[in-house]
Amino acid sequence: MSTAPFSSETPRIFLAAPFPDDFKREAARLQDSLKRVFRTGVHWIPPANFHLTLKFFGETKPVKLEKVLRRLAEILADAPSCDVQFGDFGYFGSPRSPRVLFLHGESPALVAIAERVLAVFPDERPRPFRAHLTVGKFQKRRTREEVEQAAELIAKWSDAGSQALSLPPVNLTARITELVLMETIWVGRVVEYEARVRYPPEK
Image 1 (cartoon, helix red, strand yellow):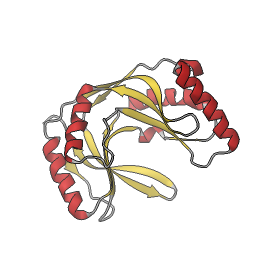
Image 2 (cartoon, rainbow, N blue to C red; image 1 turned 60 degrees about the vertical axis):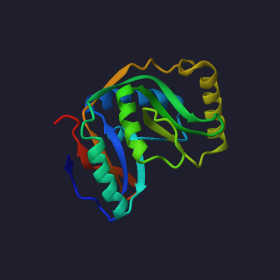
Image 3 (tube, rainbow, N blue to C red; image 1 turned 30 degrees about the vertical axis):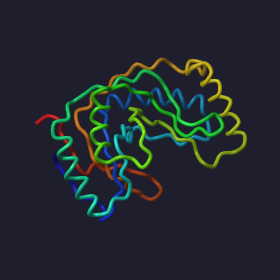
Image 4 (tube, rainbow, N blue to C red; image 1 turned 30 degrees about the horizontal axis):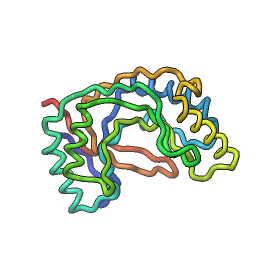
């Protein structure tokens, strides 16, 4: 385990699985295909920020941060390297209120790791871990035209699948070789993620 200093006493943190650069480039091409469908009203995640979130902790006070660091070191001491297979596009929300556009992943090994973490640090609203790579978030402030256009597209997607939007097939594999405790940093109006603690799965 390697560490870097946090920027504050109550850092905003999350546990993530980072991707190699070659995977990010391929995922960015799939993101571009979504951009051609959803032309406005979406905030697109910079490919440099692509990752899988296993657990979001949020702003963490010193006492809890100490526990997080201690328990993650224990839980992740023997976490294996694993593959995540991405096979389709996905979205969260309803046609009238879509929230997120993502690439849907499958990885039993990563699910098992996430479940170990969530057993110690459960979410306020427990729900099964889903391996997904967020590539876009619908903006909260959208014009009526943007809302109507997105609703029509999502409804079509819901009825007939992502192929109904002329989206390409998804067939990507990412090799996960480490897990990272990340800190969210605001640089002006731009969000950056800084690695603070790395958990190499293989000694």
